[in-house]
Image (cartoon, rainbow, N blue to C red; front, side, top):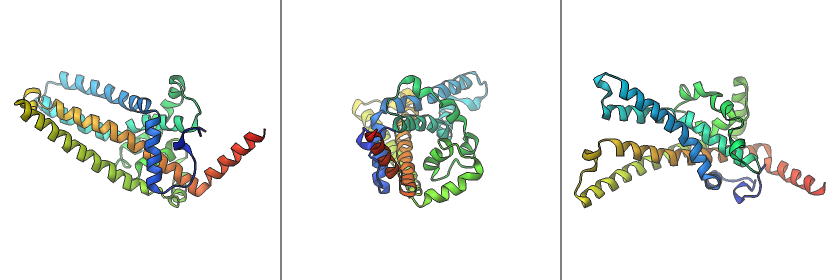
Length: 248
C-alpha cells in the first residue's frame, strides 16, 4: 500500500476530510486519471458520430444528434467511472505504477456489475461510494447488503451528499461557461452559437463532465476507504504492518 504521499496518511477522518483526501489523490496522478476516463468517451463519441453520419432519418439532424450523444455520455457515466476508479485503486494500493500495471485487471473491473450500474442502480445517490465495494472487493451479490450495512457505520452515506454537491457544481460550471461564451460573443461582435452550431455546447458539457466526474470518483473512493478505516481499523492494521516491517 502506498503511504508516501500525505493524502494516504491513514487515519479516521470526517466526510469532508475524506473528500479532501480524494482531491489530493486526483492531483497525484491527474493525467492518468483523466486520460483513462476520457479514452472510452472519445471512442464512444466516434462511434456515435459515425452512426449519426450514416443514419438517413431526418431525426438524426446535427443538433438533435449532439443532444442525443451528450445524453448518452451522461447515462454511460458508471461505465466511464470504472476507468477512473481503476486508476485510483492502483495509485492507492501500489507503491509504483506504470502504464503496463495500469492495464492489469482493467478489463475485469470494467465489466463487473456493469449492467446493474447502468440500469436499476444508475440513479443511486451513493453509487460512487458503493462502486469500490462491488468492483474492488469482488463480492457476490448476496454479500453486498451485509457489507453495505457494515460500512454504513463508517459514514458511507456521505457519498449521497457528494453526489448532490458534484451535480450542483457541474450545473454551475455549465451555466458559467455558457455565460462566458455569450460575453465573448458580445465583445467580439460575433454569435458563436450561430456560426458554429451546438458544438460549443457539447464541448463545454464534456469538459465539465470529465473534470467533475473524475473528482467525484476520487472523492467517493476516499470516503469508501475512510469508512473501512472507521469500521475495520485499517489505520491500526497498517501501523502494525509498518512496525513489523521496520523490525525485520
